Image 1 (cartoon, rainbow, N blue to C red):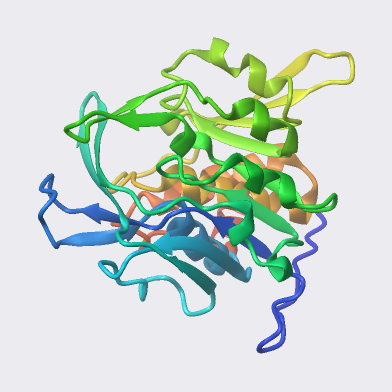
Image 2 (cartoon, helix red, strand yellow; image 1 turned 60 degrees about the vertical axis):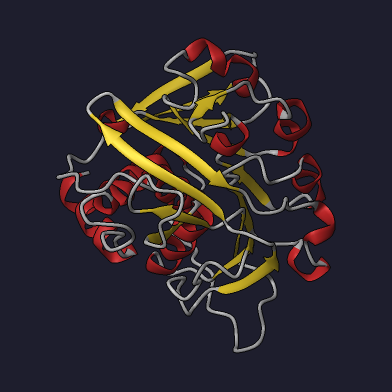
Length: 301
């Protein structure tokens, strides 16, 4: 299969931008105590940056963070533009047999189109990764034809009460964002396991991928006659240790491999395998290299 992987930029030269990830980094508390100072660095952009580097790419991150967070866990190979904020978005994730319970205790300032420098507006690929409704709708519209725009919409589809307990909500800005997307990646959890909620997405975005936890994923593609083709993609069985960030790892791997091969079904299989390795160790430790993923695919098809 053709694999046209971009070459590394020269030092100090980030044009054209290979892969741009936009969204808040987070302080993911190790306990459900909003006063705790023990945390790991999280957020879609954090997992995306590490995944891109491990898969041989050259990410740029635009985020917002306060002085209460250490950004050094982000890979040295990534270019990071950290916009200022009084605080950093802060979450607690509690995993139970019935699924994840989340609390949101603080949110950084939003990210708007005006915050995106002109020299970063023509990336090969952009991933919009909101965590707490922080990416304003005008951001999706600034990228020109030729840039593949993907999104993980979970942050647009959640709200929280006065205690910080997170719950799902309708995606209120969807009609402003969907027309500008080439790829949408979301989980069954994001749509409360109701596939009927996919209808407006699959009618406006050429490729929609739903991740299905241990069951792999399904690729939905709008056909020329207006019908939608749904193709299940098998998983790689994993020994799960930490599922945090699995969807972000998947989305990044999918977008990168889709650009390299042009094949959304192969890209989904590649992303399934990448994410499955990622959950087999705490945090970012399990995210595999491109070589590891390809070796598995060569053995298992």
